[in-house]
Amino acid sequence: MEELFVRLWAQVRMHEGPLGEHIDAFIRTLVAKGYSNDSLRRAAWLVGDYSRWLARRRIAADELKPGHVDAFLRGRKRRRVPRYEDRPTLLRLMAHLADSGVIVVATEARPLTPAQQLEARYVAYMREERNLAPATIHSNRMEARRLLASLFAGDEASLEHIGAQDIIEHIRRVTSAYRPSSAGRVVGCLRSFLRFAHCIGLISTDLSRCIPAPANWSLSSIPRALDEDHVRRILRHCDRTTANGCRDHAILVLLARLGLRAGEVAALQLEDIDWRTGELQIRNGETRLDRLPLPHEVGEALAAYLRKGRPPCSCRHVFVRSQAPRQGFASGTAIASVVRRALRRADLDPPCKGAHALRHTLASQLLRRGASLAEIGDVLRHRRQRTTMIYAKVDMASLRSVAAPWPGGVQ
Image 1 (cartoon, rainbow, N blue to C red):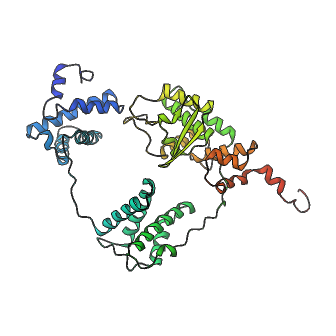
Image 2: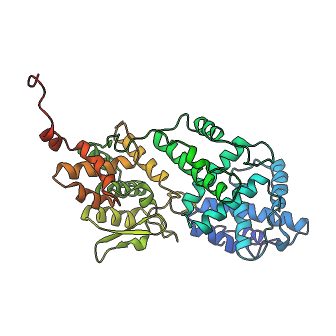
Image 3: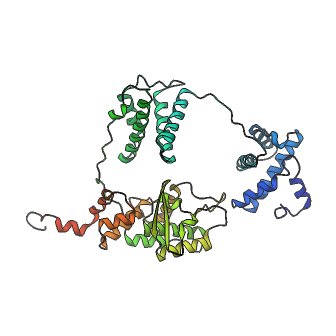
């Protein structure tokens, strides 16, 4: 606290009230998350005001309730202009006090509706009986929730009288603007829920067998890759004199040179980089681990980011947010955003602007340099050779050798 407030009276004022003995520990948690001194001072003033407000009402620290935060902010709003970070700061304080054992946050026990009870039962089934990954459970759960909300109004959740046509109409309505692959994901999630409903006896017929899959023929599309010059241009337009530029350059090099998926880059941990053996451990999902060699260009980009660009924090993710709270990216969506910003900086507008375009680009480059499809599958870590077969469509040299001559000769 002495680093934030020079005047002794201010330091004393921050420690008044029932929260005075806890404010130092709370500020230290914010420091560990990378908040600036200005943000720390505002947080300390806010918590100090809140503590004195509690003292005037003779509320002890262990008697705090979420409603006290709302009452304090309502009164504070009448005296001064509120800041957007006031409520999040106090909610972080409540979470810190709960983690420290000072308060016990009691959740309001509301009775679950029949639809919510069925959803909870479905989640338990997926977790305990099928042992599905958390991401799969979340996806299936959200689609089941959307189906129940579409079919039933209010508290009703009886599946006895629904038919295949009801499910198909729901799918048509939900996926009207979806691509075939996204529509297929929705169908797969709903089939899982309908199999569960049939398994526990909620429906007498397995309706999952009555839902046709959307037309999405295998190997029907062509990988959308970038030109090699475009990749070099993207990397060249990263300003590596800045922290964000170092981070974006390292991310783009991982995508372009190793063909990693966006989620794999986001999940990369510091201990996944083995500098002695020159290897990189890749986390794919909850259980799968792959090891890849660490090329010189990739290692150099990672080392530059870790030395000059990565902010100091306790997070073990390699790539962390540039703004507080300093933590790893939640998913590959942030990595895709990095690629889109890089394309705009390089003044490029390709048809595909996601992180997967760089993965396709690597496969196309390897193919042009003479690599076999089996070798490309090893680099991209495909489980099935069929997945790699799509790149045969961009092997123009091989396709020309098997193409039949045009009748009448070349025009």
